[in-house]
Image (tube, rainbow over all chains, first blue to last red; front, side, top):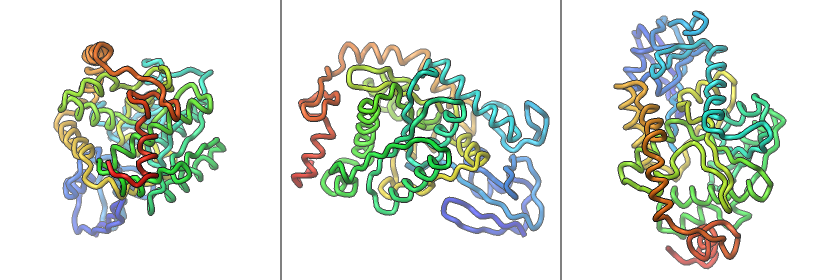
Length: 65
Length: 303
């Protein structure tokens, strides 16, 4: 299980199976530069592999006024 | 992915530059992009006193942090719009951030000026984002001039600039196209205005804030729902995804090859400005838009 906290909004989603950050972004309908994806205080590039038990933060960066 | 500079593990990928960077190299890249914008567009020098408009969002705080980091004489300005559930939180972020940097901060309080935005919204029929923008620009300019700053800097990034350019091209708005760009020179009654983040996207400023641990105000303005500007930004993001680098090419191509034509047209056909009889700010009418607005709000009329 991979847990993803999405900000702003503070939604939490879980995924049974995700291989890479790019897969996660695609599942969320986000482009590569639409959001920062962090694990343990480190940003992950789209090619980075994800592991079972990962807790990720997705910070959407598009400002809305 | 490896860092394009040092081959260490990258933390950020930038498709438009066909590059990836580790944390230290990204911060170096960010500083160089700001330096390049300042130098290429001759924005300001070491002797200038710079007033930086701070909204509490990531872009303006990143700009302020970076200019202070580079050793510029930069002071913050926060315009408190008195919007419930938004302005107080943004002001607290800005005050806390400036205190942490040991940086000076000026505050223009719209409630004290008789222009709290909720009251303005109730009294004016025009779209509130446009009116609020006019009020903010007025106080940015006025504060800069009254306090003797030589430059007014805002945190507009490449996405903001491209979104605005796209919008104005769709309407072929010659007046707005004539002054689209990262520098507006000082003219009678107007402070010099600059946008040192014009080479950086909002993704890059967000990464900068993450790496520098800059807390910023992330909640959208409660009055900005469905703003057309945001929709156009999303359209441009779709284009950038299909064709990385297209935003920068669109913006810089306009600056190099088209802006001068609109500037010449505006000089020929544009409105003549004179000081407002009440506040002295430049206007094409007897009273400037903000002084008219203050009267309208005070009298309870609608417009």
